[in-house]
Image (cartoon, rainbow, N blue to C red; front, side, top):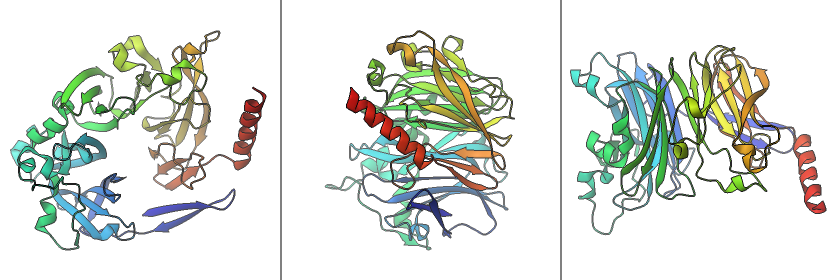
Length: 411
């Protein structure tokens, strides 16, 4: 389903269009989906992982400059040896073009019964990207071509030339582009998160959470293909979500606002309390010494998902948790009393400031999204009863804007 939102006033109008993707059998169940817009070609890219009644799994990749034709423009059809779990995307530096290039990363569950015995020993994460960026592919790139051109699409028919452009990378090629994957233990990865800090070019931050409670965070030099830092810890139950975030960006009049090297990690677990680990890379630590527990996060069944963003316009990110118990939990940073402005973002705790019941267990939370183009961020929530959008009242936004403008005029 493709959702579009528009607004001519306080009300948001939603239009829904059904997209019938080619190469999706009628007996298939979609397990995971991820989308992006290619920065080089400006095309929309969608990856869909699904399983069929025949105990088989596949990953389809589609791409088009037109949303209307996206479902017809097939780029890759790959059979999987294991059950697909989470599909996400991040970027690497292409060895053929020396520019950022997207890649899909897919976490894998149990092997299918029809898979070979070697599937048990495969990496828990597989990478899908341009095949010309592999060691063998780079040597075959034609002179004068950087591999960034748009690919000719097949429309419902199998096309070998398309299959030769995108595909699953070999373990060696995957580790060359993503050396952090070599440090992940043999566990089922339930959640992955990636960030590219704007202040440090060529650095990729990544976090992974496992079914056995293990989680880790990594800092990688993409240009050199070198792992710079690894941090690992574990909880007593499955990790359901991990989120890397900078708690200082957006603060005005605070020296901490320039602290672009500080990164915190939110870790949500099935039966443990949700926890924030503060300043993990500079502390070089994931542990009890930099752990902040989110109060009451275990009281509404297990936490399924999380979102981090500045939802109240104060420059400090809030945390939103979605639970299987049909509840949203909103947390706000509370600085210690008497702290100076510099330390307001480094000393304190998170407090539960609001909770909201929803219809059905919460399966997914979006980051803050400007869905209608008015500059005001919204929160999109997916439950088993449908898609829900939470927006600020326009009157509250205008009142806050007037207060901010009035304050600036008097300073």
